[in-house]
Length: 577
Ligand SMILES: [Zn+2]
Image (cartoon, rainbow, N blue to C red; front, side):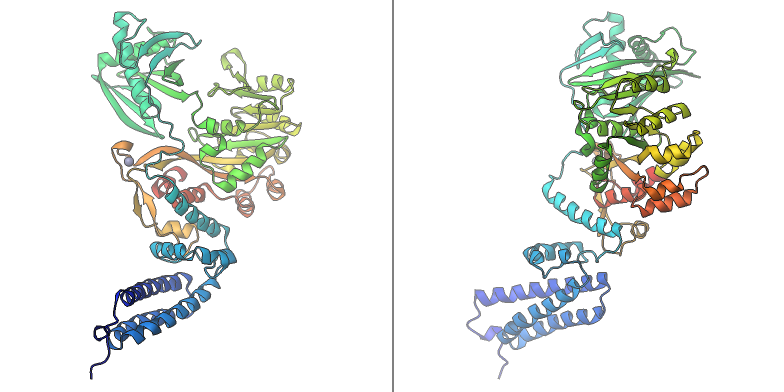
């Protein structure tokens, strides 16, 4: 007699068929999940669990073919028991909040199991290290935001310039030099100037459209090359005939009040540009080269941009953001933002300042030059030619009952000393400094000639900063994380299943990146750190104390942002090494 099988039973209808298919799916999924989880957690007896689930798969297949429905019933009893047993075993490795067989876990169990299958490795092992905990939070958040955010969302800091209306060149004093349409001819300029000016306008418009921060006019034998710095990297923008290039340079020199006849000496000037609703302050510097005059223009968007969004807009991780908000609302002390030129220090200081209530506090800034205009804040520009230095202004400003001070940059001992004194006498001082990282700031201040006791008492916190380019959301592609990164973060393999890398498309000009964000390390001065600040401090000890107090380095902060899919490992290595 033939063994009873599904084929011989007339009751084999849709119901049994779906139960059968469902069991096949459950067994296949469970076997994969058990294998990956057991491996990732390095569970004791991982091999036995694997064997058990594979054995059940095999037994079910054989049973289904040979004995039919009794095998199906048995599977529906045994497989869930085995699955619960394994889950209990797995849960023992996790804190309560991450257990599947808890009230919260059960609520999400199906979602979590699915995600675990997709990520291939279950959730992260229970972490003793804070870095691991933070990584697991990041992965969770990245998953949530991947669901919430539309695929082509613009990066937070990218404020696209789409000039629609008018375009005007403004003189330094704010009077309109030349007003013109974006496509039309200039209104108030003579016919000879017009072509040069409209060429200059075209270059400016192009640069504004790609969100350039600098424009370079470089003379070569017969031609002028125009390059633009976008997201911190120079790229070719235009090439023009030598005569045309010279014409554009002359036009710009006229607008920025430079001596048009002087071509042998370096000069500098400023002007502004109104483009649609945006205003840009432009600093111009000319240098004679062997082929002719080279011109570099720096564009500063004075109509807000990133600053308008406050600290939320500059890419701080939530723990740093929380700490920073606490620090800047203290009644007195000193907060320093440090990094090399072009690392976004000024933007961060302004963003912090914009979070302080300007109606309740007397806020004064001393800058060189004033880069962004802020409401209800007294802004003073340094003028070294007229002997109006940071230190001079600072002294006089202190007599005007300020609550909050922004000293554009600490460059010398005098400024540093007055700023520290101010911080000790009931004012909160913001400033920037050229230093590689937060710990190096201490030695830099000592090198300036500051007393170690002054540093100990005045400095509240130091934020080290770099700017990293954001991956272009339209072309970034998945890749597996390099071993070096996993090691650096002290993670187990498989915890971060994938990251993204740059590729390049039309929208990002082939660079693979669009927009920038900050990476940060925040050093809050505590008693340990203070005791280490002495005339010739040990950098190693300072670093150890910083690490102990929870300061994560710039590179680690950057790698967190790699895990979040915002930037690439290459980019973080480029800006931190
Ligand atoms: Zn792209």
